[in-house]
Length: 114
Image (cartoon, rainbow, N blue to C red):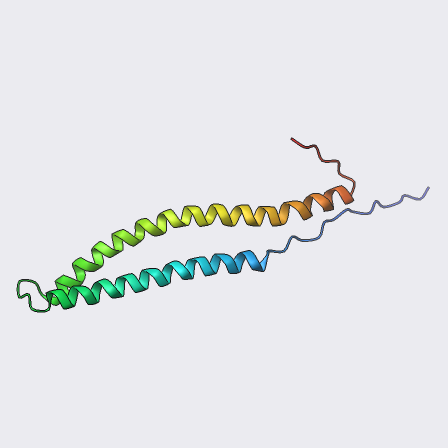
């Protein structure tokens, strides 16, 4: 009696979408550019307004300006990270879910909809 080996059913790998990755990188770079421009402008403005003030050293003036800007941008990036992460996951999941479901059905798995 000859036993027949069952052929394993395998799925193709789900590759990441380069477009979604590029979108994510562009969004981060756009925000970083905004931050850079804002910090540069604030420091330059701070120097021009206070260049004749003798009550604060330039180092302490920059330190105080950077502390305030740092707190502001940390808040902005914290809020941004939540929004970007949700959008990224939704886009990536949609990109993977449809082909995965198709492959499962093609391999004979019956899917039950909610």
